[in-house]
Image (cartoon, rainbow, N blue to C red):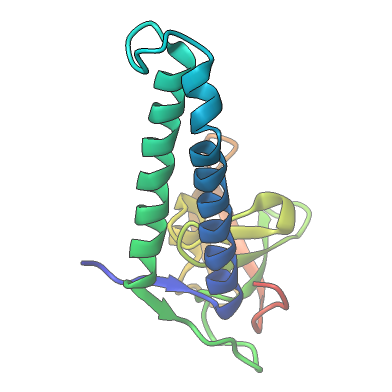
Length: 162
């Protein structure tokens, strides 16, 4: 099994995702009697609500199992108090596309990207190109579907909430 990397806050978000998936699974299970009563009393054929409930239950059970399995593969990347020399997981990176307006984002852990929160997962194509870069480095990345040159303007220590 391959290791995955998460920040401490990323681990918290993973536990939250597990809790949400478990709650959704329990809600579907709790709805089973109503689904069974809503159609043909045979419980299977010709009872769409029951069959749909079964499908959702199995899908959610797989998701819970998948998320819990991630916990066995996690390596926690501890936050830094001082800025690193190179872009790494947990870094706050300020960069510009071909001399344009500076942009800032945080390199987050496995499946922990959230563009609205300013986080991009280290697995993303953008983060893959930025990892290991130092201030002043220029990297070619795809931005808006086109190859562009991106300059690293600043690398900050781990942001709060990453």
